[in-house]
Length: 308
Ligand SMILES: *Cc1c(COP(=O)(O)O)cnc(C)c1O
Image (tube, rainbow, N blue to C red; front, side, top):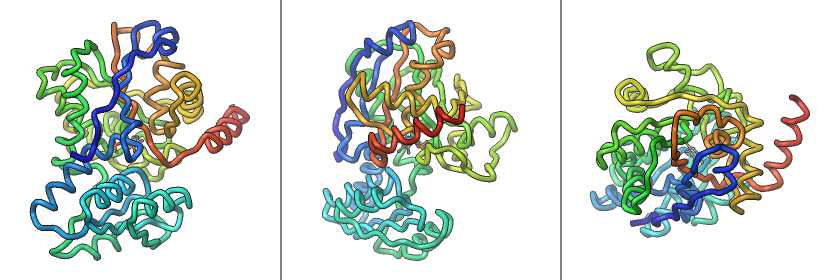
């Protein structure tokens, strides 16, 4: 097992802003800095068990970082293909895990194509969100929450491509909680699930304009859309400035740095408590994210609050 069992804490500050008890599943404390290692770790272990000798990723974000971490732990070489737009910090974090970073192309599409070309019979391509093995791995976070005896009547989480959503839905279902509503939060400019729900089918956003880059999948997975149609789910879209503000408040309240991608979910308790009005006790998945810094969050905050 490459992930750790993370703390589950009750947030007194968020209980006061949200007007109801708020439970936090602290996956920001995973060794790779986000929940992604749960599913990525499960996928990497599966592929090693099936004789693969190398991992390939095309994520310059937390998925790539999780693959790099898994590779180091399993002594399997990792190559991460990233576009030219990838930040120095992200490349540094991936290299720090001992993985090779190959910069190729102006956008993720081009980096991804090159990554797929590099996959041979010896290597496994690790998709950032669209993989059933990964969902089963993510589902362990719900096993832990239920195992701790926690009670909640809604789960709040962020949605990018929908891997976290698929894993949490699976975890709830396998613990008999398939009727507990999921509140799926996206930022304005990265709201591909919200767009699909409005259209009644999967749609592709023309571009990602949110700063929450870890939510920047232009289209959610088939599975994520299917989940939205077959179990209780609410879609909420928050503005970037509330996601960033939530990160800074969370930093003061709980002393942990998370990305705006995670701040989007936290923003429901801090600045949109009306969205939680129907629930008695909510569980928020603190999905984390390692690619930001306090300085960057403060810069975003200054720029976004000037605009509004
Ligand atoms: C990947 C990621 C998400 C979104 O997860 P999906 O499975 O793509 O929906 C949210 N927050 C953080 C920090 C992430 O790394």
